[in-house]
Image (cartoon, rainbow, N blue to C red; front, top):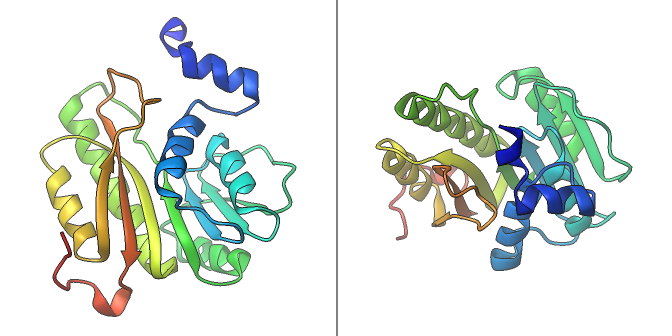
Length: 207
């Protein structure tokens, strides 16, 4: 198994000091769509081990703020614009901690949440959809109007219903498959831009 993990991006992450190869997936998305800006406020759900945090912290600069949340403990980062919270993202007290740490509404909410894989594709897909919906529920509470939501999800028959939900709440939605994703993986990333805000949820989607 370890041999499969040590592909080009795994080795590149080790050489360049990123905590995970997932950083290159986010880097490609950032280069294509520029979802982070200097001074942005960002929430990163499922942040451990911190590969995305490293990249986002550099993109938003010291004037920005990123709050990383995970059930697992995440090793601290030297960047002063990073706040780490260990806890369940669905817990009201954790969401209150996120808001306080952000100091305002979020410009971007990212989710690299992944289920504990069973190897049963349909089951893993459904659990991935549940996690994406959970992340979306958190994003609804934290995002400013016009904000961005980015989430990993596994492909399968329930994907379209998740995309439909996003289209009802965001101006634009895209499906992105970064080159750094493993070829055997069914993962894709859903990028939703232009959050309409809670009062506009359920309005006609722009396709």
